Length: 79
Image 1 (cartoon, one colour):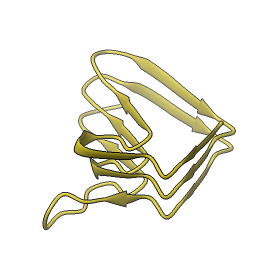
Image 2 (cartoon, one colour):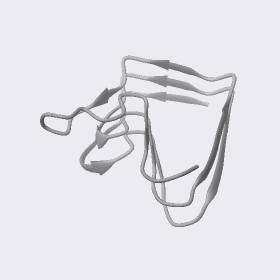
Image 3 (spheres, helix red, strand yellow):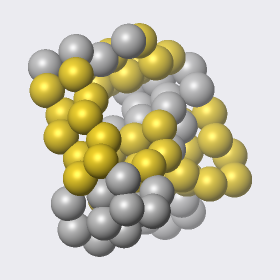
C-alpha cells in the first residue's frame, strides 16, 4: 500500500493510528510526506503489537510544538 500526503492536524498518525489493544502488521508499504501531531506516518497507543516489514518511510513529519515526536513512527507505551 502507498500512503502519501495524509494529514491529521488534531491528533495522531497521519496515515495510521492504532489504538486500544490491537495488533498491527505493516508489510511492503510506502509512507511519504504524511503529517500529524505525533507520528507523522504511524502512531501507536498503549498495548499495540506493531511489526513493520519491508516498508519505506520518507519525509514524514510530526508537528507537536517543541518536541516533534516521531516523524515516521511514534510509539506511546510498549510494543
